[in-house]
Length: 308
Image 1 (cartoon, rainbow, N blue to C red):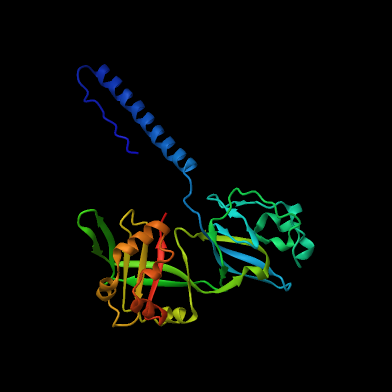
Image 2: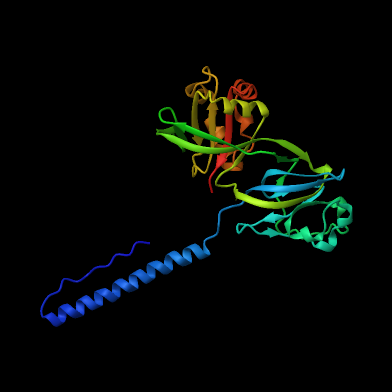
């Protein structure tokens, strides 16, 4: 909010001048008060956009083992486990009550940990009836988890290009682009996947950061090695035509895979639809087979990212 204060030009007697200055002074104070209240209450009542989180967790297996790691947490749903939900205020919304869990079946854990439960297996629940409120909508096959999170500093002063798709009803699809210096930090991890059928309980240790603003990218061991060799050839971005909220970052490690070659192979109409409709979850299958193969051989690396 911009507050503009207009002071009258004093005319006439000294008394008139004094009154005008006083009125202006109080008007200015009122304007400042309005500005202060606007900022205060905007911050107070504005909802945080965070819906995903990077977490440190502890998990308990069916074999009695206890382990920990880092994971990316969304609104997950699974047939064998009941998932709780973390709201935009970083609070766990509990769908399971303590008396519904038989903690004697979970070695090394008791009801004191109840307020940190992210997910619990139905096999250790006395009563599996839970509230449908805050039920997850992302069907989870296995939970990605890692022992370490790496930081990749991406810096490009010349070659980085930001493309966004332009959708026109009459002219069809095209690309608009801008070239500018680029510096970004990407958090990534060499990950393994937990079969949820083998897990009894998952507890929250700490929330590291909002995953909407800075995603944690999961890579294979060979992809991790590629990023650490620092032999990146080129990097560019392709964003959707709607609000540029979702985009794909392409990183090329093979000189044969240039930016122009990749762009010439893409069906941007199909990719645009995938980005807008489901955030690019299945965009790999929109790539032509030759590009899919290059990705599988780690000649090209891509991340689907978003901003709230």
